[in-house]
Image 1 (tube, rainbow, N blue to C red):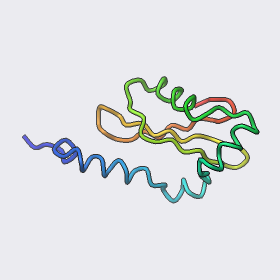
Image 2 (cartoon, one colour):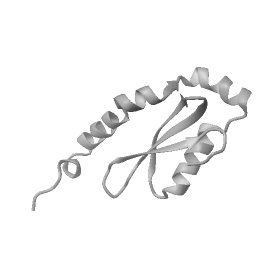
Image 3 (cartoon, rainbow, N blue to C red):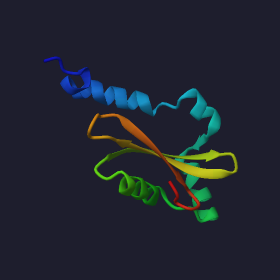
Length: 105
């Protein structure tokens, strides 16, 4: 029986997951992600939810998925978190967008 490459090698699956974290051209144009050192004052000044809460909201919606990465970004006039979760059923990443003001997914 033929196995998929990602089931044979967890290293290759990890590399594929990292590559998926790189922003796609459309995502890069739509949102400007902010370094955490610059994000913290913005989050505090605007009373936005923190990355831990955004991660918990995303994981609560998609239970059983592993947190891989969180990015804080500005898209238009709003701030959002891109929460990346690893799906256990197929080892693919899921990107969840969480509004930093309301916590809505």
